[in-house]
Image (cartoon, rainbow, N blue to C red; front, side):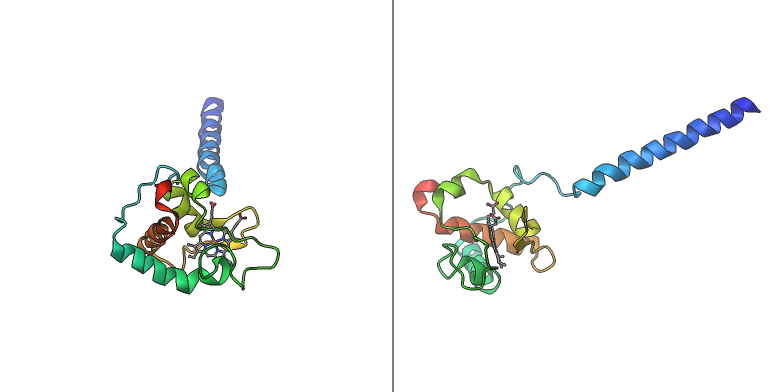
Amino acid sequence: MRSSSGSSLIVFLSLVLIVLIAVVPGAQSSTDPPAKPLKNPVASSAKSVAAGQELYQKYCKHCHGDTAKGDGTLAPSGSHPRNLTDEAWQRKLTDGEMFASIRDGVGPKFQMKGFRSKLTPQEMWHLVNYVRSLAPKSSR
Ligand code: HEC
């Protein structure tokens, strides 16, 4: 009977291994796909930009400011909300990365929290389209 208890030990250890493989990476990364290559599924129409602008007034303006230059009056003290009109910054960032910042918030201190529980993905893409509309056209 030695060999049978030996093989159940192997089965047990394999199960432990499978559970570890499944759980440990999950603790660090979410199940979201990588942000950078995410395609913006919402065309940047005037309607989408207008929807984004409306959402911006409601959820973003108090930190990022009326003109989105990062000068909102209610930003957490010591924080520096990004100037969203900065075209050099916009050029470096894909739509997917901007979407993920809105969805997940911005680390390391997360003075900007994510909007996952407040906004639908479509609303976040409207915001991306709105923010894109703020940079001078030469950057696009
Ligand atoms: C509580 C204040 C606050 C609110 C509300 C807020 N932000 Fe921010 N946001 C910040 C701060 C602070 C940063 C800069 C974070 C850093 O660099 O550490 C930032 C950064 C960003 C960035 C740059 C992320 C990057 O990866 O470079 C984007 C895009 C952005 N915000 C968009 C938005 C949008 C859109 C909204 C509304 C849905 C919003 N923010 C609401 C404070 C805020």
